[in-house]
Length: 430
Image (tube, rainbow, N blue to C red; front, side, top):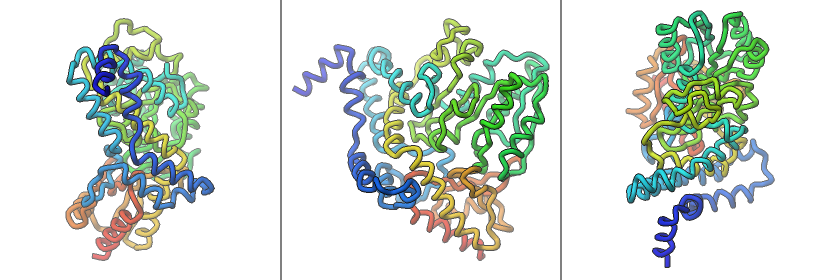
């Protein structure tokens, strides 16, 4: 009976709408998480953030190493088991008859993925394109904007290197003018940050490039405050949201930007090599796609998705990542991530030789924080944390920023951070 049903679904071309999606959404840990949330329904968001029983259930939904502590989730995050299994199952299904099952069955599920992402983003599905990472999303805009020699773009020395290089390429090839801002982070003053951007805006300024969360040290940039000023001057705003989407509690339209690119394999914990591009509906027609489409002047967001052959299994499993993200809830997630940062940072700061390169105020940073030990090179500190304490971090030395980046995620427990604190204090005492 089961085999007959499966055979019917495959030959009818209805797999994705029925069996394929429903059979992959549920996972055993979800029942436990849902029960715990129901039992704790009377608790505030802050109380949930500190409740280890709930977050231990989240931890059990992952397959992370039990020996090496991963505190570099800012690079790329592991996927919960339900996402891993979805990729494997979609991939096995694709391999049975690739050209038919991928393009005629699985690919039909793309619109549902687009719809799910649009709900998280708070915008229309017709403003969301699915791609492979933040670099691809942002370079679609950087290279697709109709700029000419002499047009000015505002960006900062602290922006991500790939994005800076993309703008430098346009400068070298087409003669656009790059106006560089340079910050000494952390800064706990939204007005002071925004004023620097606004002061650089002039009659030739066409674009402001803003990194929502600086990847090096977690500084939050006040995008809306800057974008509202740019909008008054007819300046377009491009936001690098690689470290803000599914990390901070916001909706993209609230930022008042025109374009937004992000990686989904960071804070959404989607499959490796998945990303998303938001383009305000009114702006789609004027942007050339990075990879050519039949009609580059189309106002259809799908013109940015002409990637040729790609892993549809990876793309489809984004849906399971969204489901898992929604099960936790962005308010609970954001609160937990900030709590975890404060948990370890407050303890290590008791040592006179330890300092942070990140604000502990939730208005200016989320999960990411940068730590230093006086007299110790960041590279050496990161290496010793790994080799002596089996704690994986990453050193950051770049444009006025120096230290070791510590990035927990929702599966990180306070007992893990106790291990980090003990290691830092021991090294500081040496």
